[in-house]
Image (cartoon, rainbow, N blue to C red):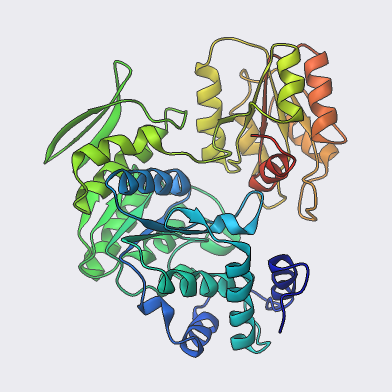
Length: 428
Protein backbone atom coordinates (compact mmCIF):
# COMPACT_ATOMS: atom_id res chain seq x y z
CA UNK A 1 0.00 0.00 0.00
CA UNK A 2 1.49 3.37 -0.98
CA UNK A 3 1.67 6.25 1.46
CA UNK A 4 0.28 8.56 -1.21
CA UNK A 5 0.81 12.31 -1.52
CA UNK A 6 -0.32 13.03 2.04
CA UNK A 7 2.39 10.79 3.51
CA UNK A 8 2.26 9.88 7.17
CA UNK A 9 -0.74 12.13 7.93
CA UNK A 10 -2.98 10.06 5.67
CA UNK A 11 -1.80 6.82 7.26
CA UNK A 12 -2.32 8.19 10.76
CA UNK A 13 -5.87 9.15 9.80
CA UNK A 14 -6.50 5.59 8.63
CA UNK A 15 -5.07 4.14 11.83
CA UNK A 16 -7.54 6.18 13.88
CA UNK A 17 -10.38 4.25 12.25
CA UNK A 18 -9.07 0.98 13.77
CA UNK A 19 -9.72 2.24 17.28
CA UNK A 20 -11.85 -0.21 19.35
CA UNK A 21 -15.36 0.99 20.12
CA UNK A 22 -14.64 0.41 23.82
CA UNK A 23 -11.16 1.00 25.24
CA UNK A 24 -10.35 -1.99 27.39
CA UNK A 25 -6.90 -1.38 28.81
CA UNK A 26 -5.03 -4.53 27.84
CA UNK A 27 -1.76 -5.40 26.14
CA UNK A 28 -3.22 -8.25 24.07
CA UNK A 29 -3.74 -6.28 20.84
CA UNK A 30 -0.23 -4.86 20.87
CA UNK A 31 1.42 -8.14 21.82
CA UNK A 32 -0.31 -9.83 18.88
CA UNK A 33 0.98 -7.18 16.48
CA UNK A 34 4.51 -7.20 17.91
CA UNK A 35 4.66 -10.97 17.45
CA UNK A 36 3.72 -10.58 13.76
CA UNK A 37 6.43 -7.89 13.43
CA UNK A 38 9.10 -10.19 14.91
CA UNK A 39 9.13 -8.77 18.46
CA UNK A 40 11.02 -5.50 17.96
CA UNK A 41 10.43 -4.74 21.66
CA UNK A 42 12.98 -7.45 22.44
CA UNK A 43 15.70 -5.82 20.31
CA UNK A 44 15.80 -2.32 21.81
CA UNK A 45 18.75 -0.44 23.28
CA UNK A 46 18.85 -0.34 27.11
CA UNK A 47 15.58 1.29 28.23
CA UNK A 48 14.87 3.96 30.82
CA UNK A 49 11.10 3.73 31.40
CA UNK A 50 9.44 6.85 32.85
CA UNK A 51 5.95 7.04 34.40
CA UNK A 52 4.17 9.59 36.61
CA UNK A 53 1.48 12.24 36.38
CA UNK A 54 3.56 15.39 36.01
CA UNK A 55 7.18 15.94 35.05
CA UNK A 56 7.68 12.89 32.79
CA UNK A 57 8.57 14.93 29.73
CA UNK A 58 10.82 17.40 31.54
CA UNK A 59 12.65 14.57 33.30
CA UNK A 60 13.12 12.71 30.03
CA UNK A 61 14.47 15.87 28.39
CA UNK A 62 16.99 16.34 31.19
CA UNK A 63 18.11 12.71 31.10
CA UNK A 64 18.58 12.99 27.35
CA UNK A 65 20.66 16.13 27.82
CA UNK A 66 22.87 14.30 30.34
CA UNK A 67 23.31 11.25 28.10
CA UNK A 68 24.23 13.44 25.15
CA UNK A 69 26.59 15.52 27.29
CA UNK A 70 28.42 12.27 28.02
CA UNK A 71 28.91 11.72 24.29
CA UNK A 72 26.31 8.94 24.03
CA UNK A 73 23.22 8.67 21.86
CA UNK A 74 19.62 8.30 22.99
CA UNK A 75 16.40 7.45 21.23
CA UNK A 76 13.32 9.01 22.88
CA UNK A 77 9.60 8.28 22.82
CA UNK A 78 7.16 10.89 24.11
CA UNK A 79 3.49 11.77 23.77
CA UNK A 80 1.39 13.56 22.85
CA UNK A 81 3.05 15.60 20.14
CA UNK A 82 2.58 19.35 19.91
CA UNK A 83 2.91 20.43 16.28
CA UNK A 84 3.68 17.20 14.33
CA UNK A 85 3.46 13.50 15.09
CA UNK A 86 7.16 13.13 14.25
CA UNK A 87 7.99 14.75 17.62
CA UNK A 88 7.01 11.52 19.37
CA UNK A 89 9.87 9.50 17.87
CA UNK A 90 13.45 10.70 18.22
CA UNK A 91 16.22 8.59 16.72
CA UNK A 92 19.62 9.35 18.25
CA UNK A 93 18.41 12.85 19.10
CA UNK A 94 16.83 13.75 15.75
CA UNK A 95 13.12 13.66 14.94
CA UNK A 96 12.19 10.77 12.67
CA UNK A 97 12.05 11.77 9.01
CA UNK A 98 8.87 11.69 6.94
CA UNK A 99 9.84 8.85 4.55
CA UNK A 100 10.94 6.62 7.44
CA UNK A 101 7.81 7.34 9.49
CA UNK A 102 5.46 6.69 6.58
CA UNK A 103 7.18 3.40 5.76
CA UNK A 104 7.02 2.20 9.38
CA UNK A 105 3.36 3.12 9.76
CA UNK A 106 2.50 1.30 6.54
CA UNK A 107 4.40 -1.77 7.71
CA UNK A 108 2.48 -1.84 10.97
CA UNK A 109 -0.83 -1.17 9.23
CA UNK A 110 -0.26 -4.11 6.87
CA UNK A 111 0.85 -6.43 9.69
CA UNK A 112 -2.18 -5.51 11.78
CA UNK A 113 -4.49 -6.53 8.93
CA UNK A 114 -7.36 -4.24 9.88
CA UNK A 115 -7.83 -5.68 13.38
CA UNK A 116 -9.07 -3.35 16.15
CA UNK A 117 -6.16 -1.59 17.86
CA UNK A 118 -5.75 1.78 19.54
CA UNK A 119 -3.90 4.60 17.82
CA UNK A 120 -1.31 4.67 20.61
CA UNK A 121 -0.73 0.92 20.45
CA UNK A 122 -0.07 0.73 16.72
CA UNK A 123 2.08 3.87 16.66
CA UNK A 124 4.06 2.52 19.63
CA UNK A 125 4.70 -0.62 17.58
CA UNK A 126 6.00 1.59 14.76
CA UNK A 127 8.29 3.38 17.22
CA UNK A 128 9.66 0.07 18.53
CA UNK A 129 10.43 -0.99 14.95
CA UNK A 130 12.36 2.24 14.43
CA UNK A 131 14.30 1.91 17.67
CA UNK A 132 15.14 -1.74 17.05
CA UNK A 133 16.64 -0.97 13.63
CA UNK A 134 18.88 1.98 14.50
CA UNK A 135 21.59 1.56 17.14
CA UNK A 136 21.76 3.88 20.14
CA UNK A 137 23.21 3.74 23.62
CA UNK A 138 19.84 4.29 25.33
CA UNK A 139 16.10 4.44 24.72
CA UNK A 140 14.19 6.89 26.91
CA UNK A 141 10.62 5.65 26.99
CA UNK A 142 7.78 7.79 28.34
CA UNK A 143 4.57 6.08 29.44
CA UNK A 144 1.49 7.24 27.57
CA UNK A 145 -1.22 6.57 30.18
CA UNK A 146 -0.82 4.97 33.61
CA UNK A 147 1.86 2.33 33.38
CA UNK A 148 0.67 -1.17 34.24
CA UNK A 149 -1.38 -1.61 31.06
CA UNK A 150 0.28 1.08 28.95
CA UNK A 151 1.55 0.03 25.53
CA UNK A 152 5.13 0.91 26.51
CA UNK A 153 5.01 -1.66 29.33
CA UNK A 154 5.62 -4.57 26.95
CA UNK A 155 9.34 -3.97 27.57
CA UNK A 156 10.04 -6.85 29.95
CA UNK A 157 13.31 -5.70 31.47
CA UNK A 158 14.29 -2.02 31.27
CA UNK A 159 17.65 -0.93 32.60
CA UNK A 160 16.04 1.65 34.93
CA UNK A 161 12.57 2.95 35.77
CA UNK A 162 11.52 6.39 37.00
CA UNK A 163 8.24 7.44 38.66
CA UNK A 164 7.76 11.21 38.78
CA UNK A 165 5.18 12.80 41.13
CA UNK A 166 1.80 11.07 41.05
CA UNK A 167 -1.37 13.17 41.24
CA UNK A 168 -4.91 13.19 39.88
CA UNK A 169 -5.43 12.87 36.12
CA UNK A 170 -7.18 10.42 33.77
CA UNK A 171 -9.31 9.11 36.63
CA UNK A 172 -11.73 7.53 34.17
CA UNK A 173 -8.99 5.02 33.29
CA UNK A 174 -6.68 4.94 36.30
CA UNK A 175 -8.99 5.17 39.32
CA UNK A 176 -10.51 7.82 41.54
CA UNK A 177 -8.07 7.68 44.46
CA UNK A 178 -4.39 8.56 44.60
CA UNK A 179 -3.65 5.00 45.73
CA UNK A 180 -5.40 3.54 42.69
CA UNK A 181 -3.55 5.88 40.33
CA UNK A 182 -0.22 5.12 42.02
CA UNK A 183 -0.87 1.39 41.62
CA UNK A 184 -1.19 1.87 37.86
CA UNK A 185 1.99 3.95 37.71
CA UNK A 186 3.87 1.38 39.81
CA UNK A 187 3.00 -1.23 37.19
CA UNK A 188 6.26 -0.36 35.39
CA UNK A 189 8.30 -1.77 38.30
CA UNK A 190 10.25 -4.90 37.35
CA UNK A 191 12.12 -7.52 39.40
CA UNK A 192 15.68 -6.46 40.08
CA UNK A 193 15.33 -3.18 38.16
CA UNK A 194 16.07 -0.04 40.19
CA UNK A 195 13.37 2.64 40.21
CA UNK A 196 14.01 6.33 40.87
CA UNK A 197 11.01 7.69 42.79
CA UNK A 198 10.35 11.42 42.70
CA UNK A 199 8.56 13.33 45.50
CA UNK A 200 5.24 11.68 46.34
CA UNK A 201 2.26 12.11 48.62
CA UNK A 202 2.35 9.54 51.44
CA UNK A 203 -0.64 7.67 50.00
CA UNK A 204 1.08 7.23 46.64
CA UNK A 205 4.48 6.38 48.09
CA UNK A 206 3.02 3.62 50.26
CA UNK A 207 1.56 1.94 47.18
CA UNK A 208 4.81 2.26 45.21
CA UNK A 209 6.84 0.83 48.09
CA UNK A 210 4.42 -2.05 48.56
CA UNK A 211 4.50 -2.92 44.86
CA UNK A 212 8.31 -2.67 44.79
CA UNK A 213 8.56 -5.11 47.68
CA UNK A 214 6.15 -7.48 45.96
CA UNK A 215 8.09 -7.61 42.67
CA UNK A 216 11.59 -7.16 44.13
CA UNK A 217 12.44 -3.76 42.65
CA UNK A 218 15.04 -1.63 44.49
CA UNK A 219 13.92 1.97 45.06
CA UNK A 220 15.90 5.23 45.28
CA UNK A 221 13.38 7.58 46.87
CA UNK A 222 13.33 11.38 47.01
CA UNK A 223 13.84 12.62 50.57
CA UNK A 224 15.30 9.31 51.71
CA UNK A 225 18.03 8.34 49.24
CA UNK A 226 18.50 11.69 47.54
CA UNK A 227 17.43 15.32 47.86
CA UNK A 228 17.45 18.20 45.43
CA UNK A 229 16.47 21.84 45.80
CA UNK A 230 17.45 25.45 45.32
CA UNK A 231 19.92 26.97 47.76
CA UNK A 232 21.16 30.52 47.23
CA UNK A 233 20.13 30.47 43.58
CA UNK A 234 21.98 27.20 42.96
CA UNK A 235 20.62 23.71 42.36
CA UNK A 236 21.98 21.44 45.06
CA UNK A 237 21.70 17.64 44.80
CA UNK A 238 22.77 15.24 47.53
CA UNK A 239 22.89 11.46 47.74
CA UNK A 240 25.19 8.79 49.13
CA UNK A 241 27.76 9.43 46.40
CA UNK A 242 28.16 13.08 47.35
CA UNK A 243 26.93 16.60 46.62
CA UNK A 244 26.47 18.35 43.28
CA UNK A 245 26.33 22.17 43.28
CA UNK A 246 24.91 23.12 39.90
CA UNK A 247 23.56 25.92 37.75
CA UNK A 248 19.75 26.10 37.94
CA UNK A 249 17.68 24.21 35.35
CA UNK A 250 17.06 25.82 31.98
CA UNK A 251 13.37 24.92 32.32
CA UNK A 252 11.69 27.52 34.56
CA UNK A 253 9.69 26.77 37.68
CA UNK A 254 10.50 25.75 41.25
CA UNK A 255 9.14 22.25 40.54
CA UNK A 256 11.97 21.64 38.07
CA UNK A 257 14.24 21.00 41.07
CA UNK A 258 12.18 17.83 41.66
CA UNK A 259 12.57 16.75 38.04
CA UNK A 260 16.28 17.60 38.11
CA UNK A 261 16.70 15.52 41.25
CA UNK A 262 15.13 12.47 39.63
CA UNK A 263 17.30 13.09 36.57
CA UNK A 264 20.53 13.25 38.56
CA UNK A 265 19.60 10.16 40.56
CA UNK A 266 18.86 8.36 37.30
CA UNK A 267 22.08 9.43 35.60
CA UNK A 268 24.15 8.33 38.59
CA UNK A 269 22.31 5.00 38.66
CA UNK A 270 23.12 4.55 34.97
CA UNK A 271 26.81 5.25 35.58
CA UNK A 272 26.83 8.57 33.72
CA UNK A 273 29.71 10.65 35.07
CA UNK A 274 29.06 13.68 37.24
CA UNK A 275 30.55 16.09 34.69
CA UNK A 276 27.92 15.14 32.11
CA UNK A 277 25.17 14.77 34.72
CA UNK A 278 25.86 18.30 35.96
CA UNK A 279 25.08 19.67 32.49
CA UNK A 280 21.75 17.86 32.19
CA UNK A 281 19.40 20.31 33.99
CA UNK A 282 21.02 23.39 32.46
CA UNK A 283 20.99 22.12 28.86
CA UNK A 284 17.56 20.48 28.61
CA UNK A 285 14.93 21.90 26.25
CA UNK A 286 11.22 21.03 26.37
CA UNK A 287 8.65 23.15 24.52
CA UNK A 288 5.33 24.33 26.04
CA UNK A 289 6.57 23.97 29.59
CA UNK A 290 6.57 27.53 30.89
CA UNK A 291 8.02 28.56 27.56
CA UNK A 292 8.59 32.24 26.93
CA UNK A 293 7.44 32.88 23.36
CA UNK A 294 9.70 35.23 21.43
CA UNK A 295 8.89 34.61 17.76
CA UNK A 296 5.73 34.59 15.67
CA UNK A 297 2.80 36.95 15.23
CA UNK A 298 1.43 36.49 18.77
CA UNK A 299 4.79 37.24 20.40
CA UNK A 300 5.27 40.25 18.14
CA UNK A 301 1.86 41.64 19.13
CA UNK A 302 2.81 41.32 22.80
CA UNK A 303 6.25 42.83 22.26
CA UNK A 304 4.80 45.94 20.58
CA UNK A 305 3.22 46.97 23.88
CA UNK A 306 6.06 45.73 26.08
CA UNK A 307 4.26 42.57 27.24
CA UNK A 308 5.55 39.05 27.84
CA UNK A 309 3.87 36.02 26.23
CA UNK A 310 4.18 32.57 27.81
CA UNK A 311 2.98 29.08 26.86
CA UNK A 312 2.37 26.03 29.03
CA UNK A 313 0.55 22.78 28.28
CA UNK A 314 -0.07 21.71 31.88
CA UNK A 315 -3.70 20.66 32.29
CA UNK A 316 -4.35 19.04 35.68
CA UNK A 317 -4.73 20.40 39.20
CA UNK A 318 -1.13 19.72 40.21
CA UNK A 319 0.13 21.44 37.07
CA UNK A 320 -2.07 24.45 37.84
CA UNK A 321 -0.43 24.70 41.25
CA UNK A 322 3.16 24.76 39.96
CA UNK A 323 2.36 27.10 37.07
CA UNK A 324 0.58 29.58 39.34
CA UNK A 325 3.41 29.39 41.87
CA UNK A 326 5.93 30.24 39.16
CA UNK A 327 3.96 33.25 37.95
CA UNK A 328 3.37 34.43 41.50
CA UNK A 329 7.14 34.53 41.98
CA UNK A 330 7.83 36.63 38.87
CA UNK A 331 8.23 40.42 39.10
CA UNK A 332 4.84 42.06 39.46
CA UNK A 333 2.94 42.66 36.22
CA UNK A 334 -0.72 42.50 35.28
CA UNK A 335 -1.19 38.90 34.23
CA UNK A 336 -3.95 37.51 32.03
CA UNK A 337 -4.63 33.88 31.09
CA UNK A 338 -5.75 32.60 27.71
CA UNK A 339 -7.09 29.16 28.44
CA UNK A 340 -8.67 26.22 26.66
CA UNK A 341 -9.28 22.84 28.34
CA UNK A 342 -10.63 19.40 27.53
CA UNK A 343 -13.89 18.39 29.17
CA UNK A 344 -12.16 15.45 30.88
CA UNK A 345 -10.04 17.77 33.04
CA UNK A 346 -10.80 19.39 36.40
CA UNK A 347 -10.87 22.95 35.12
CA UNK A 348 -12.22 24.37 38.38
CA UNK A 349 -9.37 22.78 40.32
CA UNK A 350 -6.86 24.07 37.78
CA UNK A 351 -8.24 27.63 37.91
CA UNK A 352 -8.43 27.83 41.68
CA UNK A 353 -4.66 28.21 41.96
CA UNK A 354 -4.69 31.38 39.86
CA UNK A 355 -6.95 33.45 42.11
CA UNK A 356 -4.83 36.41 43.14
CA UNK A 357 -2.28 35.64 40.39
CA UNK A 358 -4.22 36.41 37.20
CA UNK A 359 -6.26 39.58 36.76
CA UNK A 360 -8.45 38.00 34.09
CA UNK A 361 -9.00 34.79 32.14
CA UNK A 362 -9.95 34.66 28.45
CA UNK A 363 -11.53 31.30 27.59
CA UNK A 364 -11.04 29.91 24.08
CA UNK A 365 -11.88 26.76 22.15
CA UNK A 366 -9.14 24.27 21.36
CA UNK A 367 -8.79 24.34 17.55
CA UNK A 368 -9.76 21.05 15.94
CA UNK A 369 -10.92 19.40 19.17
CA UNK A 370 -14.43 18.10 19.69
CA UNK A 371 -13.66 17.42 23.36
CA UNK A 372 -12.87 20.96 24.42
CA UNK A 373 -15.02 22.83 26.92
CA UNK A 374 -17.06 25.55 25.14
CA UNK A 375 -15.52 28.96 25.94
CA UNK A 376 -18.64 30.37 27.61
CA UNK A 377 -18.85 27.38 29.95
CA UNK A 378 -15.13 27.49 30.67
CA UNK A 379 -15.38 31.19 31.54
CA UNK A 380 -18.28 30.43 33.87
CA UNK A 381 -16.19 27.77 35.63
CA UNK A 382 -13.34 30.24 35.99
CA UNK A 383 -15.65 32.80 37.56
CA UNK A 384 -16.79 30.14 40.02
CA UNK A 385 -13.14 29.58 40.94
CA UNK A 386 -12.68 33.27 41.80
CA UNK A 387 -11.37 34.69 38.53
CA UNK A 388 -12.67 37.48 36.34
CA UNK A 389 -13.34 35.72 33.04
CA UNK A 390 -14.83 36.10 29.59
CA UNK A 391 -15.07 34.04 26.41
CA UNK A 392 -13.09 34.87 23.27
CA UNK A 393 -13.46 33.68 19.69
CA UNK A 394 -9.79 32.72 19.26
CA UNK A 395 -6.35 32.97 20.85
CA UNK A 396 -5.60 35.97 18.63
CA UNK A 397 -8.77 37.77 19.71
CA UNK A 398 -8.12 36.91 23.35
CA UNK A 399 -4.59 38.30 23.18
CA UNK A 400 -5.80 41.51 21.53
CA UNK A 401 -8.39 41.97 24.28
CA UNK A 402 -5.91 41.20 27.05
CA UNK A 403 -3.29 43.62 25.76
CA UNK A 404 -5.89 46.36 25.25
CA UNK A 405 -6.98 45.85 28.87
CA UNK A 406 -3.46 46.45 30.14
CA UNK A 407 -2.01 42.94 30.43
CA UNK A 408 1.77 42.96 30.47
CA UNK A 409 2.15 39.23 31.02
CA UNK A 410 -0.05 36.75 29.17
CA UNK A 411 -0.01 32.99 29.67
CA UNK A 412 -1.61 30.62 27.14
CA UNK A 413 -2.42 27.49 29.10
CA UNK A 414 -4.72 24.59 29.95
CA UNK A 415 -4.03 22.05 27.21
CA UNK A 416 -1.16 20.51 25.28
CA UNK A 417 -3.47 20.50 22.25
CA UNK A 418 -3.97 24.27 22.57
CA UNK A 419 -0.22 24.70 23.01
CA UNK A 420 0.38 22.61 19.91
CA UNK A 421 -1.96 24.78 17.84
CA UNK A 422 -0.03 27.89 18.95
CA UNK A 423 3.31 26.32 18.01
CA UNK A 424 1.97 25.12 14.65
CA UNK A 425 1.07 28.73 13.88
CA UNK A 426 4.73 29.65 14.09
CA UNK A 427 5.20 30.73 17.68
CA UNK A 428 8.44 29.84 19.40
